[in-house]
Length: 116
Image 1 (tube, one colour):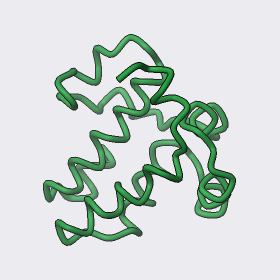
Image 2 (cartoon, rainbow, N blue to C red; image 1 turned 60 degrees about the vertical axis):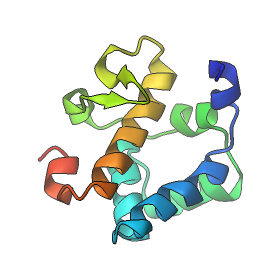
Image 3 (cartoon, rainbow, N blue to C red; image 1 turned 135 degrees about the vertical axis):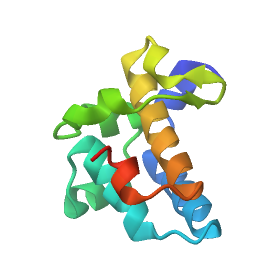
């Protein structure tokens, strides 16, 4: 998929898929929100605002208050790419989020997911 197409996708259109993926594995929407807020620095009200205005991924990450300082500790493969080697900064942020949601769905503890 072309990067610009992904960047212009509405975060709100993908968000329910994150929740669905987590809930299928016995995890919760609250855990998904905790992960998103940890990664981006959003608090719940700002996160909900981004969903309500249907911000695209580019805007969602551009307006994120602050990426977590431990983001560099997120490593591994997602969609066939090592997240730490993705050169496009926005795509890397999107894949960081994908990786964290995958870890949640695979049963990792929140402590490990949040790199504590």
